[in-house]
Image (cartoon, rainbow, N blue to C red; front, side):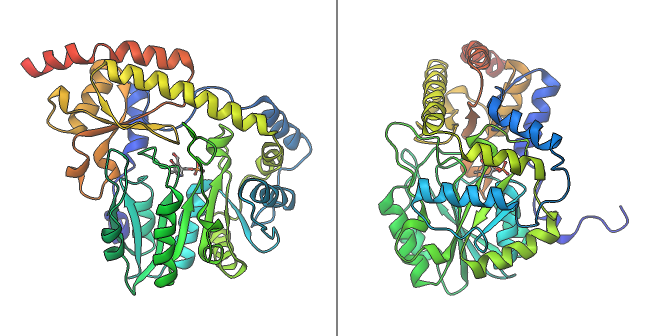
Length: 394
Ligand SMILES: Cc1ncc(COP(=O)(O)O)c(C=O)c1O
């Protein structure tokens, strides 16, 4: 390459999560690394997508989203969050939550600004901040309940704080932020005039009575929150690449501009099918959560039997585990061994922390998989203690 990567591109590595997916393919492993379902998408959505292609919805949609889909998003916001959202001025349809987050940051954060991120964090947020030229300020979530220390949070805020990234229900921890915690964050955002980018893509995947509270519904927060969501997880269509950002008109204006030049728009026929998705009945969401509840419990039992420590998730479809019992040098060595020798791909914990040492004893499993896949994984997991003991003796 004539001059090599840019200074920005040099500051982060390739995605470890996506790398583990490639390793899983190479070694014929069960892929419990990257969070996507191996079961089918809802039939009604596939039919709606096919119908949209047939109806010649094959050209660019309006850059900030097809009108019907924006109307459906506004309807969902009213129904689920009790928020009145103007589809004409407050919604941007994007290529997944991924684009919604980076477009929001590029649109609203300046070089040198600081962005507060709770860690462990979904790995995209790191490069998002770097690409925006901003400086991350990490606040630790501490097991077993992944709470944060309010004083540490206070210390992370200052005059340069432009935004907070909040992901609830949380990947990788399964934490669901409680109202009191959100209130503490909100108070600091109001005090320091800070925006919040909330990644709420797991809002419907909740366990044990956990409740999703949207930051934008707290007093004073609607005008400073960018709500980010997507079809990917709720409707099991991670490959469709359709998401959205909801924010006050002035903020949306900036996001729309950046979005237009990044991608022009999200897939038009799949936005059409998205209208069908957002119109699914309440029973769809109940069944979705029940299905994941059963998968979670199956997975936790298998992990417990195999000698993993774990922190029980209250939402999303991941579980962070503790691997000290197996005697490996660190999380990366363990994950490489697990994919090659046991045939299970996971994500090393270090990829969720700014300082890799913090995740050196953790790996993340995901469980959005068919029962057969999880049973196969459980059988392989059962061999871990014995194989690990052998590996130690070598
Ligand atoms: C917290 C979080 N945000 C965003 C994404 C990506 O979402 P999308 O497919 O809508 O881009 C993921 C995918 O795993 C995720 O876990």
